Image (cartoon, rainbow, N blue to C red; front, side):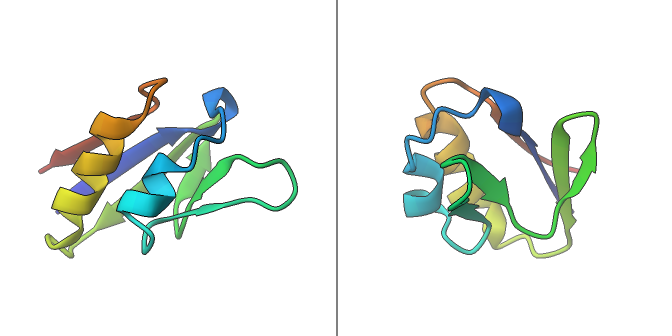
Length: 76
């Protein structure tokens, strides 16, 4: 299982995550911040739990590219 967490309120809208993992992230037209698709929100932390191990590399690359380091990705 892959767990991806996003602290959306700290997003600066650089778009790197969308470029590297377009199936998991998209930019909001409302505020220009990223949205983690199919995620649950708990106190500003958006978490996606997926059994699709194939998303790990793309999400990990997005986390590494994020200039404000608000994305975490782990396999459990």
